[in-house]
Image (cartoon, rainbow, N blue to C red; front, side, top):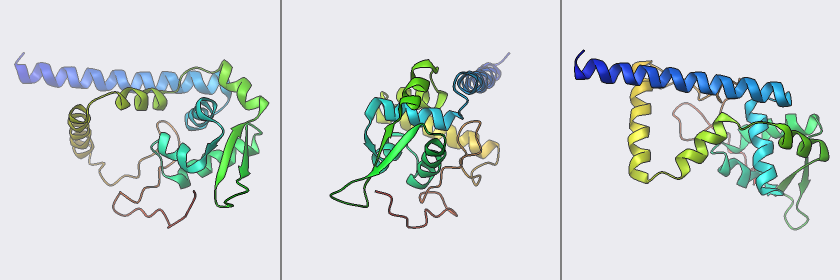
Length: 174
């Protein structure tokens, strides 16, 4: 086996491991909580930071505010969160967990997307740039550069004004 063959095999195996891990964490989260991974990740972030502004939650999750609002609307319909408007500035919406939301957070496992973000946040900019370049290469190999970025194993699409062909709609969701 050449050095090139060995490295390709390592990359393929690591990619398989990533997909296995994401699938496993997603399945466990759904079984334990009945929620999708993005929903569980959102309530875990709210538990860590709440009450939190919707705009701050979207920044912490590295998601467009419109994507987060869709997730939060489903959580609110399920009775797991509460949204309240600021009295000082009616455009500002704060999110808190309900008692039921707090119970789910306590009994639920970690979420792959949260683990990925937490792991990336501790890396240097140089390391992040190297990973980003590798991910761009992988997307190019799969001819996936133009695909909308769906949340991991979820139908949720992260709407982003930074991606050609996608428009955040100019919504002010502060």
